[in-house]
Length: 258
Ligand code: ADP
Ligand code: MG
Image 1 (cartoon, rainbow, N blue to C red):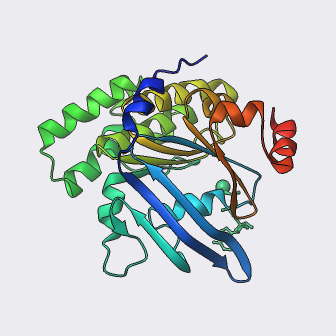
Image 2: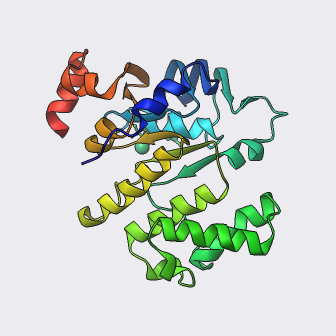
């Protein structure tokens, strides 16, 4: 289904700098220990899939990466900034690290084009002409050029998610975090969104993707994290994981989802 166009690229990224680094990070919701002593480094250009059971802390993990959740102890460096430092301007991180949600989170009272141009206009002070050109190019890439003047309510779920990804790309981010981007979609819409995500991967943008799409995890990602009970249980090559999972928990999980 996919070809491994990033195989060579991955070699080229060896020795490049980390963009996300967790050091002994803990997170609690009251008594619930949601993230347990997380130590994890993600390098620029990596495409990382995170899979694991519901409620294991996957969303919490990636939401800490752009400050949507706070951490209680340890250190988290994203894009060179210490996320927990009160002097850190979280908006600087969000400018370079985008997020794509399960439920799209588009601005409902703005057109598709405005959804894409708004942040670059305000945050990057990009001129209207350049902004529109970049947005239209992106809409073409995601196959929605003809929807520029529509409102989100007139789009299907798959189309909305492609707009959300285009909106993220318009900021020219270093990384995009995806939290189950295809989980709310009808089956026939999933592939179009996965194709756009594959395109993002080919641009060399760092991706962290929580997903149930095992095809994407196996074929597009170059790193796989199996998350369970607030911890990284396996952190390995996707093919190795699917062919020879190391832990009994991962074997059980795979036997249910594949
Ligand atoms: P996953 O994304 O793997 O399904 P989550 O990160 O959403 O898991 O949740 C991990 C655990 O933390 C779950 O037990 C969940 O109920 C709990 N949790 C998540 N967010 C909150 C919150 N805002 N308040 C309290 N508990 C939460
Ligand atoms: Mg989740």
